[in-house]
Every structure is written in structure tokens, then in C-alpha cells.
Image 1 (cartoon, rainbow, N blue to C red):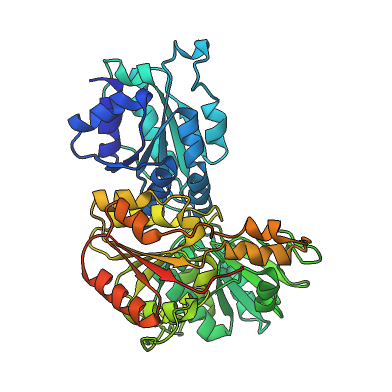
Image 2 (cartoon, rainbow, N blue to C red; image 1 turned 90 degrees about the vertical axis):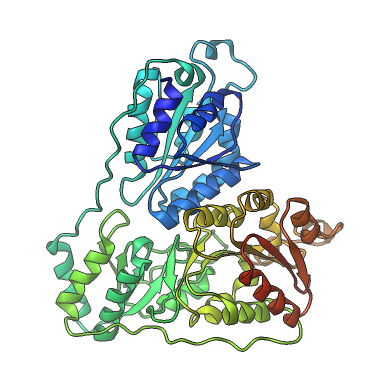
Amino acid sequence: MNGAQAVATTLVKSGVTTCFANPGTSEMHFVAALDAVSQMRGVLCLFEGVATGAADGYGRMTGGPAAALLHLGPGLANGLANLHNARRAHTPVLAIVGDHATYHKRFDAPLESDIDALAGSVSGWVRRSSRSAEAPADAADAIAAAMTPPGQVATLILPADVTWTDGAQPAPAAIARPPAQVADSVIDPIAAVLRSGEQCVILLGGAGLYRPALEAASRLAEATGARLIAETFPARLQRGAGIPAIDRLAYLAEFAVGQLAGARHLILAGARAPVSFFAYPDKASYLVPAGCDVHTLAVAGEDVAGALAALGQRAAPDATARPAPSARPELPTGELTGQSAAAAIGALLPEDAIVCDEANTSGIWLPAATAGAPPHDWLTLTGGAIGQGLPVATGAAVACPGRPVLALEADGSAMYTISALWTHAREQLDITTVIFSNRSYAVLNMELDRTGATTTGDVARSLLDLSRPTLDFTALAAGMGVPATRAVTAEEFAGQLRHALAEPGPHLIEAALPAVG
């Protein structure tokens, strides 16, 4: 058995059965090994950023890693943006990067680069295998590292000769360790704070936004009057009718400051103390109110739900959670806008859906419109590197083949990773993609004004404009095998969305919104 076959077998034994791949010459023996290790599903992606984003989406939904197979340093570099998002999401991801054969590196071939340095910028663990016999154990260690609570990117670098050399044997399966329990010495003082009568805010993040933690937090809020707020961009938020509702911290710093105003205590449960996404002239970077004490109940790698439940036993032993009521908007009519599109989505969202939200400015009405829809998962842009939505939807659909996936995508960010549609078609994934087409980087039009940058002409605005020519997303989708339609009214959008959600397989709807800019 060669190194590649032994590594692939070790991955499967450890539960890694999916590989999102954009391989090159250095990875050919790993590619060939997938024929010998039939339990590993190989999913071809036409760009490395799609492979890494898909691995992120897969990990968010399963809690375990997928592999992303990348070609040398440039291939890894192409995938870095979505590995950055995965790092911020604390997603377990295994990045396997091929390299030149060990004896070839000294010749400085054209694709030679510092893979270790690139990997270190997004990875919590990096290792380079030097011998075929050691590579399977390195792979098991990589999986264990990726699964280290709360999850991280682990990068394994496999030189070509390590993969093709015979004499390797599979390593024992990796063993994941559970999250650490929070000590009573941490919980008891926070229980006292909640019973003090002073205004408290509980900021939830990570696993704190799964249903068990939300129910425990809701009981605390009902008993003590504490306010619940979710981090701005959750990796995975479970929500909908029957699940306690929670507002997310606003993206705009001044709105976030308003949400936190008056708080005497800020309790962090799987979240970090809030900061502004960017620096702005004359606006705060650190968003905790003056005079507010910050208490950390549980960090991301700890048992957040368990800590909240234990806190509830002390501060709210008899309280019950408040579930969100079942409620749907009426189907909209008339002009198609971000608001009417959100109403249609709220009216039609199926039970157990997975929503991958990179709608950006077009999506500001979505949380309210979908709050009372049947239970669903909501995945967001955790690290701010756009081009995540379509790849994350890819991985989520592969991870959960029985669940409908709805990818809500802004037109500008869609173009970063538009080739994900080809993988949707090739794998016949049940993904309905909605492109909010306003022909602009609308968020940057807003940021241009907020940063105080002075513009006196058309040059600056032209760099934020997506017309001349106008992108034709129905043609782009059809060219990659995805059935596509275009809606210009609210009625058309609702009808097309109903049809797409009812029919298995990939679909795309271009929602033609009023132009911005």
C-alpha cells in the first residue's frame, strides 16, 4: 500500500468520507487512491475557494471535517479566503495540500512556494509529512487537531513522493475529545450577577446558538430579565417556530451600541466581547458600554450548552423557555424588492431547510420575515471574506442530502465563486440559489459614505458598480447545467421559488431588484 492509499484509508476509518477536490499533478496518487478506497466520496470543484468553502459548509452541518484537496501553494492560496471564514466559524476542516517531491524542492521549480507559511495564516495545526510510513499517523493527528474543540483548520502537506512510495499502513482512527466542562467557580459568580437585579445581556455564539443552548438561555432570560443577543455572524444558528428567538448584534457599530446600551453586565457564552467590524472616524471600535462588566461564562471550546444549563439551575430553576410562535408573512405582490423577496422566502421556507446567507445588504429584512417559519438552520458569513455562500451551500447539501438548501446570494459576492453552480449540477445537489441582483457592491456604496472618504466624481462610484455590462445570472447558471429563471415582480419570484423548492436538484432564481448606486 502506498502513502496515498494508507492516508485515504486512515481518513475513512476516522470518519472523513468526503473530499472536495481541485487537484493537480502533485496530488495524482491521492486521486488514484480514491478508486481503491471506495468509501471516500470525491467531489470535484472548479476553483479551490469552492473546495475550501464546501468543506466549511460540510463541517458546520456535521460537526466533523471534510477534506479539501489542494494543489501546492498557489492552490492553497486560492482557497485561503474561505479557510479564513472556516477559521472564524471554528469549523473542523482538513486541508490536504500536495507538494513537490522532497528531492525536487531544491530545484525551485515554477510552482515552488512556502506552503507552510501560507497554511499557518489560517490553520491551527500544520504538519508536513516526510516519509510514506509516517503519513497515515500524520493524517490521524490532523483529524484529531481539526476536531479539537471548538474546531479548527488543520493542514497536512503531502509531498508527491510520500504519496507514491510503497510500504505504508493505515494508522488507528483519530479520537476526538469532548469540549471542556465549565467549573462551578465560574458559574456561581455569574449566577449571582443574574440575580442582582442589574441589567444583564447574554451574548451567545458558536454552539451557544444551537437549540439546547438557546432553550437554556431563554429560561434564564424569562427568570431574570436578562436580554439575549447573538453574535453578528453565526456559523450556525438554529431558529424558527418552536425555538427561542434571538436577535443578532447589528453589523453597524452605532446600532450595536444601541442594542447594548444600559447593560451593567455582559455575559459571554461562546462569543467574544463585541468589536466594530471596521474602524471608522469618530466611531467606537470596542462596543462594550462604559461601566459594563464583562463576564466569560464559556469560551468557544467549552461546553456552552452545559454551562448555560448549569447556570439556569442556579439562577432560574423553575423557568421555562419562550419558543418563537409559528408565523408566516403573506405572499407579497407588486414590486420585487429586498423586502418583498424576504416575505416570499418567509412564506415558503420549508421545514428543516438549511439557509446559507450571503445576501448582504439585500438580506436585512430576512431575519424578521423568517423568524416564525418552520425550524431551520441559518449559516452566515463568519469571517467577512465574500464568496462563501455558494460553496458553503455545496458542502451543506453534501452533508445533509435529505434537507433542502437555500443559498441567498448577493450578485457581487456570487461572482467570486460562481463555478460552485457547476458542482451543484454535477452532484445534483438540492440547492435553490437566489441571486439578489442590484447591479452593485451595495455594501461598499454604504461604506464609502460611512468611512468619510471624499469622492468628487464618477470614478469611485464606478468601482462599486456592476453594470456595463449587466451580469446575466440565468445564462451563467444555464451554462453550468443549473435550471434558471429571472423574476422582476414579487409574484414571479414567489412562483419561481415555490417551484424550485418543490423540485429536487439545483435551481437558480435571479431576483432583479432596483439598482443601487
